[in-house]
Length: 440
Ligand SMILES: C=CC1=C(C)c2cc3[nH]c(cc4nc(cc5[nH]c(cc1n2)c(C)c5CCC(=O)O)C(CCC(=O)O)=C4C)c(C)c3C=C
Ligand SMILES: [Fe+2]
Picture 1: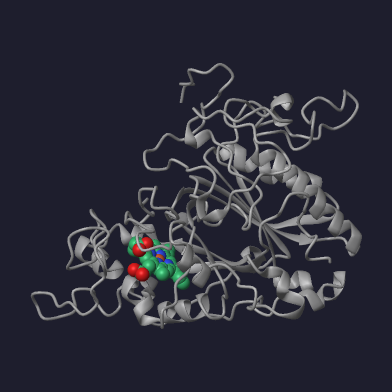
Picture 2: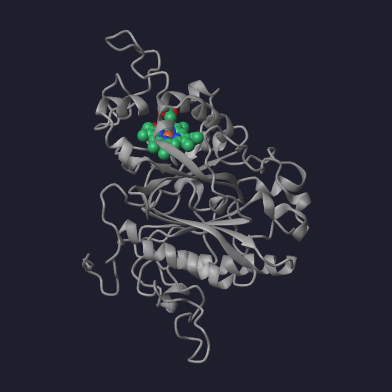
């Protein structure tokens, strides 16, 4: 794509201009913060350190370029509008030194805040260290704007074992997920002491963020597994159009949205009384469930339209519930079709995942499509990297996935082959850093 910018210095060449993906910057879900590092808005690139130090943000800037506030009551990257690209990484801690881990989390905070503002990972990172040292920024995002980058951190259950004296700080709700019927989990895509979710509207910006955090963590953390994603498969704000997944269906219609603060408090954010004792630092945070779900798209592509719609429980073109007309019409699970059978079949995905089937349970989905080449026997290795945030995985994801694993018509076409759960701490106030509450 060519550079369409009319402002000098603004490069948008890799920004994805798809309609309906425009980011709303700032106060979504109360997640805005004044940040210790002044945001540079969109009219500057990473190389402009003067701007990083305090130039006012441009109000005329296009939303896809924009910087999303790093600080606030909740971490960005949860209810902030889902960007188009993902780079997710699960890491293991390879040192046994508690102070090294604490100090890395502090250093990561500084770098993450800078990068989300569109700055280099460290001041003068590109060439400022002189010719004899390795640069403190890898450089591939130097000329690019913030691109809506969010960096969200999570802690896995294994981080709270004997190694770092954190056992007494483990949140009660942070437990490895149980096995589900049909799971085909690959240990090489499962678990992790830590995770970083980097989302942006430019893939190069997301990859740059993860790469630089890994570089900073050399000797303290090592990558366990990672996943790239594209074409978000959920909308997390009513300002966003509903995208489609690789089965060609609109995905995210009945998701929780940033504009529903009461529902988010009920289903997504950990409340002050939820975790007592060592886990009380999680108030305002959320739990993340990640599942790598391979979709057998070649089989799906040979399936009739009627069967596809019955499997999902919605029509393919409009995304309306079967028996209804419009995408956002309510699901009527009692409605009968002309043949007297339920309009939304008993094994339809949306029926089984709907709150009325699950005692009111809901989750916030924030997944991405992926294609990771082919499997060597003529099939694409493609699917949905399912990411969902919730207040308590055992009370939300586990019963929901149990219901789906048991009866979902979709199971014929999918396979869960990666899995992890993480506790994502609350957002940071000015001057705070990741790990501060954890190591208090
Ligand atoms: C355990 C939770 C869920 C998994 C795993 C999951 C996988 C999965 N979903 C689709 C496609 C669609 N899902 C849709 C709705 C939907 N899915 C879940 C949960 C899981 N999905 C929920 C809670 C809902 C909402 C149900 C409701 O209240 O109506 C839809 C319909 C559009 C929408 O509302 O988002 C589609 C399409 C795939 C392909 C998939 C695994 C690969
Ligand atoms: Fe679903």
